[in-house]
Image 1: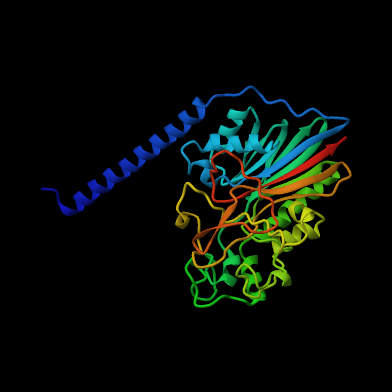
Image 2 (image 1 turned 30 degrees about the horizontal axis):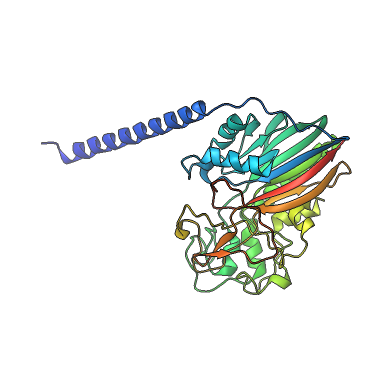
Length: 368
């Protein structure tokens, strides 16, 4: 007979051993999966035409590294091909950029929780703080620096006006530190902004703005994108205050406002200035492969927001040609699939959709 203490110890060892075995098997599976994917020849840059080069940029949250679908990497690669994306920012990165890069023959870079995949050569790369991956691209002789970010998902204060907590940590009212429904919506803008500041997202904007200033001094074109987990300063206006469960709140969210104040342009809103007619929602997206309960965090609210972006610094060598939402035609509203009825023209690829976000595609032209 085994003494109780020894028995517990033995069970603990068995449990740890099982976990280690599973982890080793998973690591091996990920490595084998990555190495056995068909490797495409290195992709060639798009040729310049009369000194102008196409540069299509896609922000594409890939939901736990594309692992939610069995062939997630292939699905991501298929979407990139269908959208003709030259540069893709991949928040929730996992090993997706390496796998997709192998499938397409594209350069790739992973530093933070956002990866970058590029048809154009990456000539240098580095992280910027905790939240941004940075790469310098050679676009047919013109250097373009791109920043991809996936900012803090907690302190998700856009849920407060909708009557839900957003894991807002710290000395805040009861219920804010979880994801459950609150007793009532929070409509005090100053209080919401104070909690949002505590997320660190506005500070992350300050960090990348400082780096952008140095790159502009070096003469490079600048493009930035990713999943910010925060709505745009341009969207929660007085005209939208009674829509989408904003519950009367009009608010200038700090992170995107800082980018705007630093001179960057929100490419989607530049093309579509009216946030009521063209809300451009990217979260939560529908996905026919999953139950609605897998796609919503606030099941009794209209939680739709635009939280995925592509920004650019105005430059005489850079032109925004178009910007569009990419993904399924429907979103999740109050735990139901709702087909979009706005003026947005959503580009829906034929490929299997691998994520719970919609993506954003902006087409630029770079001139010498």
